[in-house]
Length: 307
Image 1 (spheres, rainbow, N blue to C red):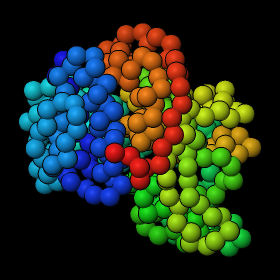
Image 2: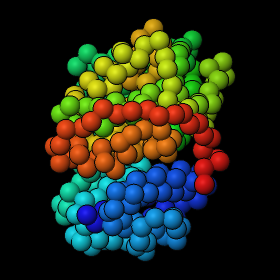
Image 3: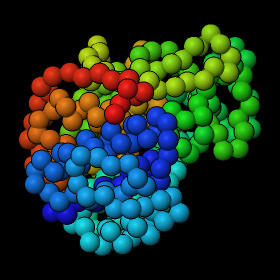
Image 4: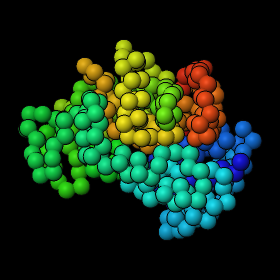
């Protein structure tokens, strides 16, 4: 099969850790599909990887390039910031087999306010969220972040915030930061629980929150509850393909974000699971049974050290 992979940072020439994380995810996926004998093509503004054929792109022409290249591909997958992912996914969805979530599901997950309301109404534990214009209690810490966008961008802890247009504020939940990676579909399959290395200081007002890396896999005292929470979340939202669900393990699991796309944890997951991520994605999308997933080792990384 001809597989098209488009990772936004690589495709548009973003720098810094965005490019480091993006290129590492792209390399992991491309390597996995190539190892199965598939013909991999990937979009890039200049950065190259060891697997597949590069297709030139840039920020202004990425949509056009995806339109053209997805028509030639048997299947495709896009990784992009949540506020752009639905639009880019819709392009490949129209032209070929989409190996990820649908554009409609992505748009729902990208709206952190609406997504939280839907999950809460369905019985999934989520942090209490303030409405736009509402002010929080001065004695309670809240996590403030864009209503649309990646969870680790422009996110900070604040006491007594007034929620501005385009942002959400949720009560800060004390606990362990983890993510659950799974292959979503009618019968979701959990891959791993991952420890999220998060920089946060709940004692400091207006403290930035940042993601540093992951430990894969990771065991908690609530693994069974985490599995149930993650699988239930993916079914409620109609997710397909690789999904990463960010959870705080407090007195119980609280879902704080749903990432309807490959996440940076994929870099470690590809090193420790069997069958391969490419095999699992293709089986899931074609409706084939997914064999048991075996975790064969462990891996940890700091995102600044990704190459």
